[in-house]
Length: 159
Image (cartoon, rainbow, N blue to C red; front, side, top):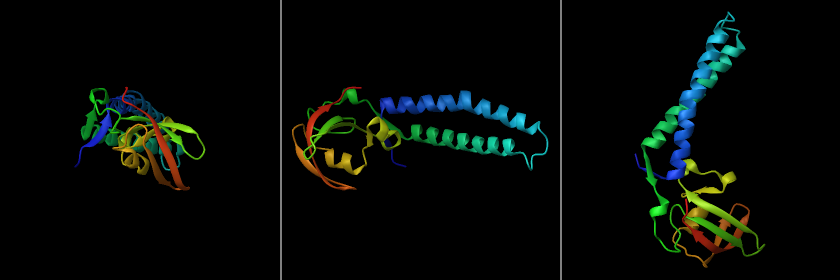
């Protein structure tokens, strides 16, 4: 299996989620199952079935996180020195050339991508369009809603 790139911050967030699932959620769900069993007939016990379903979800997520962390290639972006060139881990400020709006994204690994937090996957079309470009460059990007033109305003590599 290929090693997936991940920022140190992303790896830390996944470790914290794994720890919470193991130390808080798993014991809570075990308690909920024991409580639901005490109510009697398991065939028609909705609480029991819901708790078992949640247990399956939690155990699956634990296995997924453990596998992801074991195959992660954690990259400390503070040690990178690419200058103004965009590489993995870069925080990029873009200006839409049509609307003038400004947006900032950080290029991260696939498992830590979260568009709500402005973290885009290194394998996303936008990140692939950005990789190798430098501050001040302009480029066109084929977005789902049509062609967009951006200017790269700033490139940072801070944790």
